Image (cartoon, rainbow, N blue to C red; front, side, top):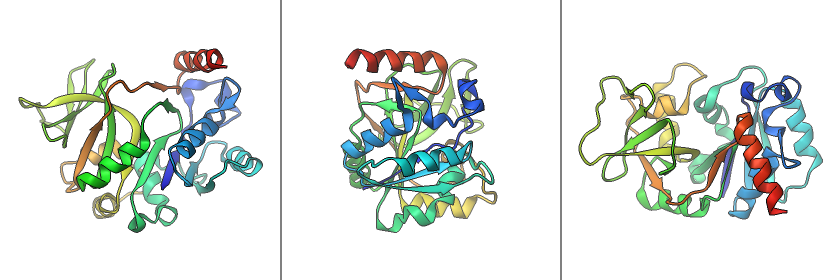
Length: 246
């Protein structure tokens, strides 16, 4: 199986570390977050990994060259321009070779106990073009799905804003927190090419675009343990968790 790790972000919330280093190399109990994500992917059976880079990308290149992760790791270079989460996938098309099967896309700052093999299997069985891993955890922003788990909208709970514009939830629809982990198939990539005129765009904005004809589904894993380590408070929590496991 193949996966892509989104590791190009600026990591502004993790300054001052990210003033001189990429976010992906922030240590979590002494181990860079990128290495921890690679380890989880390897444990779940992923053998071919693509890592996109931008901010201090040369440091990630040197780090990947310096380690034997037990899996193949190639670099999708965005040092010339940061392409956001959707543009990054499109830019890496030649590495992903989606015609040979779907690819798991995983944010570098997400650590979880998710069953990624089950997510991939659910995607294949559903016939969806993309499958989003979701849970019932607390979040200020949630995705909305109908009774068949098709994506219908997005809700910012704090200010009451819904997307796409003019959307209002219907009876039977449920709101779940997105994990930052999803599966992308060839059909989604084709829709990206059909709709996107620029090379930089958000994957969530694309998925919610009313012109998008791709079949987008959610996959719910109850009791999912997940921590977003992209900010100081949650990074401290993750450090404590891994330290206590030693």
